[in-house]
Image (cartoon, rainbow, N blue to C red; front, side):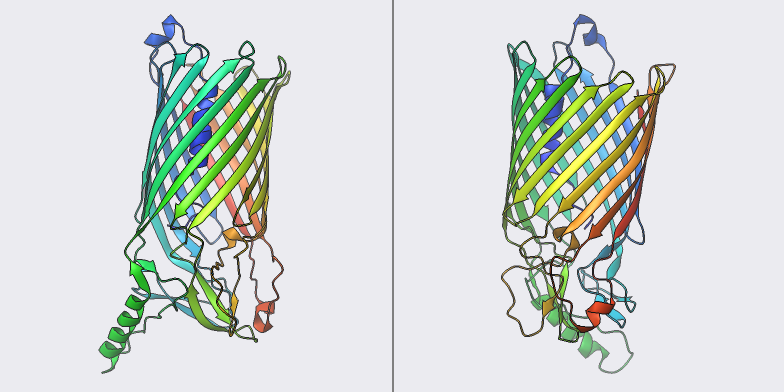
Length: 438
């Protein structure tokens, strides 16, 4: 699987758990007898000529009284389509062997190399328990499990929150640990080894000999069947009521990653001075990553709705700095319906080891990746959500958004033929979701 990030974003999960902890409702005697509350959603995500995903979610929450709250969620994703390999486009057609080593595919002249056999199914299970542990103090703990064809992740998290200043101020601390196992089809490739190209069947007397030679070449590029990665996330939070209309939240996050961070499906093109590909190499990334993030959010109650704006700055020792601005404005159309425009802007710099290609004759660096997700880019999301409360108290909502990601040249000179192809194609996607709460 290669879509965006791998299945469990532990920082996001921990942030969600902490926010739920901070916003735990006050229970009363009648709440003990409340039925389960369910949130369901079906989402479609479709990139133009690339990945398509369909995601089904069902979440359940129950307050057992005295703020003893259980929440759980099941998520199922189905992904298909084409994923960029990292190789550069060329003025002629290119032949690539699939990551499994079984079969080839051809990319046309001038086209970005995409492996169009990308498909996967992911199942994710989460459970969280929140309860008071002392006066003005609550604790929360949870587990998160995700599994797909080539990736499995298990995580645990815990957090505490303390109210003070007549509950106008809340301090929080959260910690999470995740253990991931990566088991790609075809095995873990040897960093910077040349990609073996599978010969086409030619019905000649040398066919079996050519096939055996290819299998030997392919096996020499494998180092193991699987590898592991560990992630520790720490989050410190401060939530402050400013006045009767405004509330602010500040978070600091620290993420420590140790283990296999390389994408086993990504490759790099080695080109000559004419910009023509001479070799294809498997990428290599550092086996550690330290990331710091700073987050600010403000919600303001208007006479006709709620304004919500947030800003996040993140930086890591891969030298990726990013800025995210996210804004929503809920406009009440009536007592039972609303519209919510949404705008999000994202900008990041390139990782210090990002290379769109390597030059023939140059020394191979210690680390290098042509994955556009590590390059310089900007992205924005614009959309609209419509929600309504039904006669029975349930809520139905519809969301439609447009997403565009624009990679940029981070200062690399493009030799020869590479000046005539699009090395940094934009990515466009449509997101549609229907959700129902009961």
